Image (tube, rainbow, N blue to C red; front, side, top):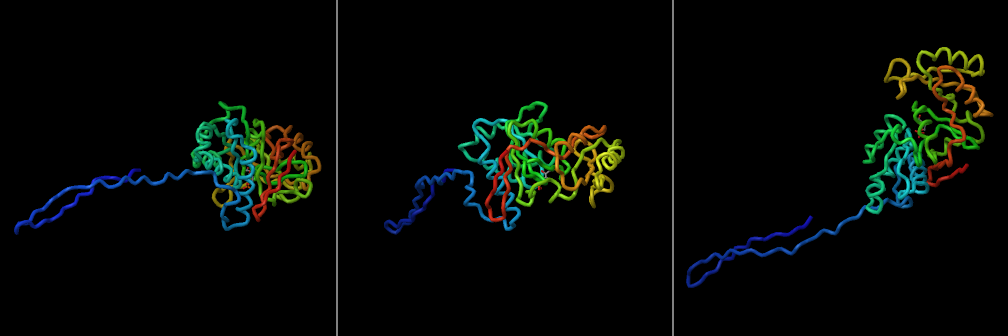
Length: 293
Ligand SMILES: O=C(CO)[C@H](O)[C@H](O)COP(=O)(O)O
């Protein structure tokens, strides 16, 4: 914006008893406001969000993006679901606004893992694309419900399970972002007591539930309900149901995954095996611990 223009001035003169009015105008100096360039905020300069857990999630997500995203090389980015990945999308939106990166980030195609994830992509001004057209994802970011000492994961607490697995296994590099409460001392099933989420085709849920109890000795299997907002079970983005199966502490998550997956009617399990390359755990003081495969 340029501030300029002619300013009209009227002067009155008295000459030999007569009053004259003289009108003229002067040009104002041109004022050019200094252009403010947006730059991606430095992590160390961030103000507190007023919540230790949100600070932890943001710290994990921002660090994960800064350290793993190759703005100049990556083109297809997977964006997961949940409350931590919100800050991943936010960080990408900040890169998009920074003139140093705009040309590259504006050409990214972001692949969603569900409805919420699609909203995050659009809300941050990023391009949304479908995995059918972009089956090779350069890098994907997602949250987790629990992470064991070997970087095996339980996911699906937000019921986006199948698409999360599709996106993470289609990615060359899968990066997990979480607050430190998601870190198990050793095994899966220690902190996350809700059970392993399992996405099933609706007519098969009773059969699968019975088999989980009888053949795999699950202590309990629950058909996940929609809660107060919905009478009846949760329906996933792929129109399936979710069973939460409690196996206690899981010594061998790969073996358990394989056995569940073999049941007719199971679409996917929430056990993400040998998939995550790194996990970023945010702490409430803003520090981040990184686990690498
Ligand atoms: O698997 C998921 C959704 O199905 C989420 O990634 C997982 O529940 C973690 O969510 P949050 O970041 O809110 O803790």
